[in-house]
Length: 432
Image (cartoon, rainbow, N blue to C red; front, side, top):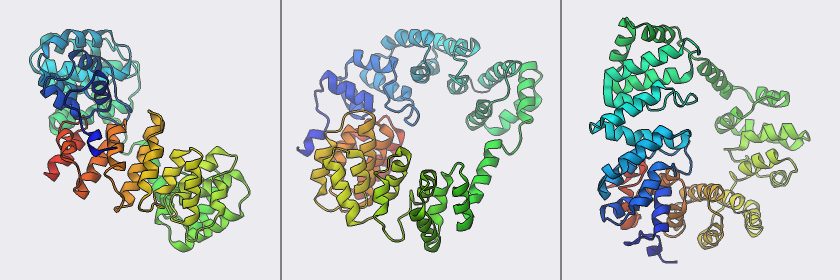
């Protein structure tokens, strides 16, 4: 496998174009500028949401707008995009469509502006009442804020104040300025806006979830005896991960002693949280035994704890898991048990992993491995991960890694300037 195999081909096939648009690779921008990106393929990417992870990856409407501009002929896309938004019933593509329609509206297209407003007025997406709000604020400024506040105030006749109402005020304050937003809400004579303003002012200064966070964070300083007692009593224990990060070695030894004595599966599961991000004070092979427990949740916590420990036994267990075909677990255990030369073995294994979620999970661990081991050869393992990771959010971390080690190939630096992820672009700009 040559390093050039990862570089963008000058004349891409349709499948290569589709793959680049799915992943948000900047090579799509290079092809668009060269007139080698298919109009039909780009239109499909505009009308559908091709992101791998819609929860973490940026909405791509603005990136697709750039591609349309580089390719030329944005007007030819307009009717299709407007019709798709008007008829859309799913949240997945609607945020992307709103960004695109918002761009047309910013250029003075009145039907696009009206479409966004009608979408909000009709409450076309009752489960997502914040759809199109950012676009309307960007297009119409203060007038857009009063329009949206009036609609939200009207809805408060039948609905309680919710988190997205707070979010609306926050976003508007960021775009228009806090003083302007507070002034409008404080001086309005509009009945619906006044209803919204009254509900906003009635909200507690400290939100319930903020109070819960303060209580949770207070546990991080508990003495070890209280932590162990809590584990015996049951309840939600994920906060113990953070406690374990800051715990001193004596406290960790006490928890470890309690763990090796435990025979209750629920207690074992809870105590393992302490070592999710902290190495054992002294390695004990019984942790490997927990990885083979019948209870899946114990296995999950045990693997995460085991991966924190650099030890020959862990390395041999990782090799065993790799030979059994469990690439995700093997890569996780390899992060702190890597040796020079392991790259070829790992690359052979991960290249066989199927597309989708499993490959994503494997490549997240590969990034951790490369970051933890500065001497690892990133030329193949890192570039393979960059090229095949379905998630643009994860790819940004890889570009940052290449940039920090000053060994990014020129073709990667060039295409990353047009990546769908703005943070990836920023990494390249800062390293220039």
